[in-house]
Length: 113
Length: 114
Image (cartoon, rainbow over all chains, first blue to last red; front, side):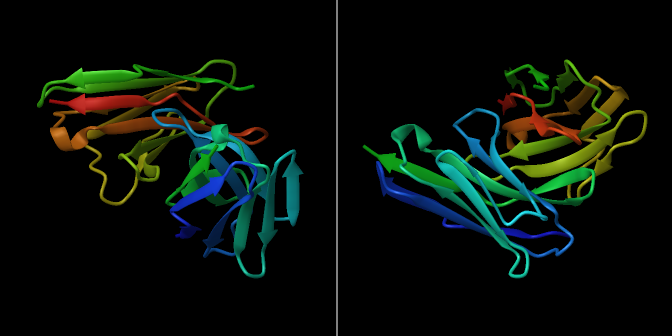
């Protein structure tokens, strides 16, 4: 099955700085890559996603890049704010109709004011 | 957008008793529902995949007789933790698959077995 690796496990940045979280996947058939933000005790919230026919996608301060050849994708958050502090999960899906998600281990992002 | 309502949000039960968790899709039909378990500071681990009208598919290491999943209708899927023990204490969360909007997660259930 698919194996998703995520790094780093913890990330601390100063407010206003950028944060980058990286994930790799093993199955070249994976074609959908969402990123989730999860606050303590809450459900994961989709913040951005990308499909395998696209190399980059941006939504205001958040961007995701995908390198299919290298099988890795990254989350970029610019101008970080304290409210960005949370656990971020990357995931991958191999089914054309979505199917099950394979999650990374998560990154605890802390943004210091 | 699509909403999955999950109940209860938290439950405390005695060891040996059973607990039922419900997930309802409010404005769409959920053909497939995924059930996850999340221990503190860990990732979401898929327990099983349920499809409406058929038996659930369990992940390796998940006891199907302990974690009973029922998906009898397109809007309701349930997870029953039978004979719960303290090691079953965890955050349980469901997720419905949607082709257009991706995955919709329930709000989660914090189970504490004492």
